[in-house]
View 1 (cartoon, rainbow, N blue to C red):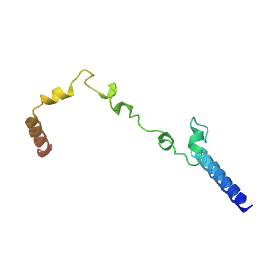
View 2: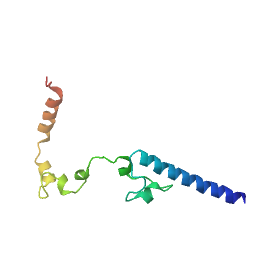
View 3: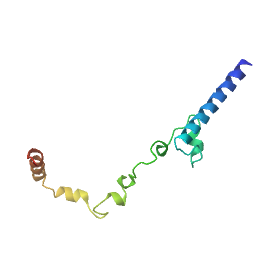
View 4: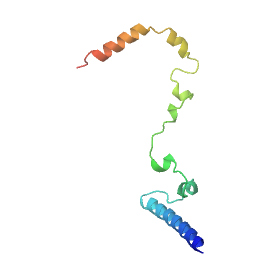
Length: 104
């Protein structure tokens, strides 16, 4: 009988914590558990999605690898060939001048 009471108390406390978090979310302007992924987001033991914590985050999708939007020179540009043609000594000299000359 004691195990049953302990289990019931445990279930009740998880339910109260979930209810409290949903109420706090509603008071803070959240979706109060009515969002698309509310079941996964409000359940005990489930991780919150980034959109929950940062609802106004920047769209960084253009920075993803292998995306046409992240390649400013186009898909036909050969970066390896362009690097072979680069004069590294001149680049190093330019960087040295840039870092040592004052812009004031």
